[in-house]
Length: 146
Image 1: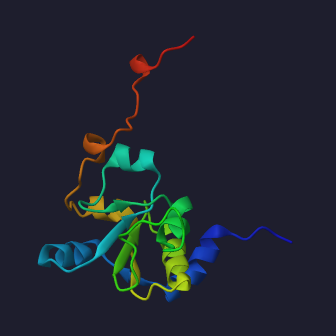
Image 2: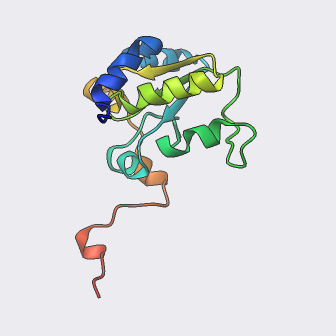
């Protein structure tokens, strides 16, 4: 059996997932629409690049566990009636995550078209995640060898 090509797989799933542009999401957040924004990127990506203001960090590998109300890892911002916009760096992990959430029973899920890279390219607001995180990237001079 051949290994599935990830780009092709994600592209085959895209029609199942609603997409919002960075400007659409920004406008909706400015209006005060009740949207839960989920940052799926790894912690270090969030610290290094910043994030969409007010987003929740949910590493892709923990999504199902944090979203499941029966899980010991459940996060209370995952509720049946909430609307979710998930994002990653470029819009691939977010397609997979959106499909997963929909298959879990969450009815209002979309993904950010182009991911955080597109958000940043549009010049939209970025929250400095490093300023509030207890985890930081160490510079070479901070690393002790030996």
